[in-house]
Image 1: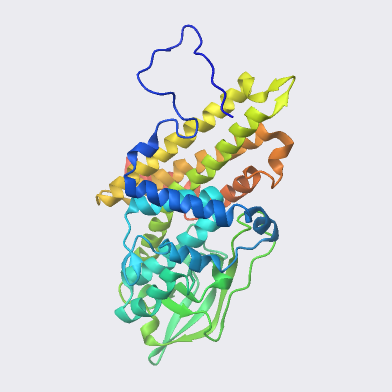
Image 2: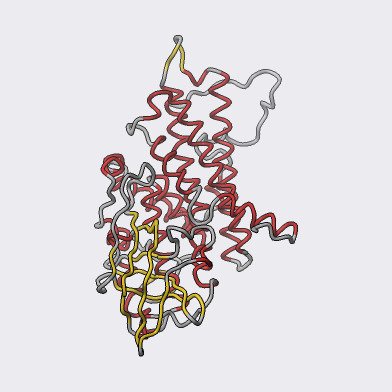
Length: 404
């Protein structure tokens, strides 16, 4: 139970409004429309009923049930920010709210939705032919079909333009060869959007995973994002018809625009993980007694709780702001880098601080903190490392490219 105390003498005791909610200190929920609030409550209820009772076990076993996909599709969360072809055409803020609540459960759950909508469906929607859109997007929106995104390679991470995967023409067909790495949804996907080097530049290909020569072995031994299927994609003389190529782009603009969509969702989702850690630490500190009183009464613990609360509120304000900018058509990739850069590092700091509040209990799966902390180590790295976003921002404010 929340403990209320009288204001300390000498503080600003006089107020004109109610005491702040410890879990929504700045009343950020008031910035949301009734429709946005309803969406948030709907996703939060789904997470509470369907995911939270099982997520620790899924994390420990290294699985995320495939049957979640049609359940998420039924809620309209797959490709929700796209229009047409069975997609709901939701706002950017709506999509962000969904990512927030999904990652408050687990980064692996948000990754499934993010990869499906922003990395697999988005390039088909933005660059695909009408035939490709009609074949794949409706099924992906319902979760009947799952997609993945093949860009990163074993020797090509932060520099995707150095990819070695190739596609060459053979008559009217294409032959793909290469290996992709760290591919979320890979081993459960029905379709992969694979980026390859061609004589015409970097091009995307829509690859049904049942195509001969395609395989997606799971990556073993992960200690982060365990509740997520992470795979290699191996392309060994994969033969595709001419209509498999995405006709709308033939440069790095294609995959980078997809990454920008995913990074936007991460800016929201990471704060969901941070919020979960803060709320767990606050409840624990109030309930846990040492030296005859709750550890929340100790000054050092209160400092930790305050730092976490401020970070969560600041990050959520940033997410709402960039969401409104995106809906108004004013958001640049550099703005997205700003939000991904700061919110993920802040979320990781919150998780580490929360772990210290919980002490030894903080390393067990009885609480969500160590799971979020481990997951955020991956979120800190993928969709552009923290260092890459630092250099993007540095170039933006100086006009000088420091990548090489």
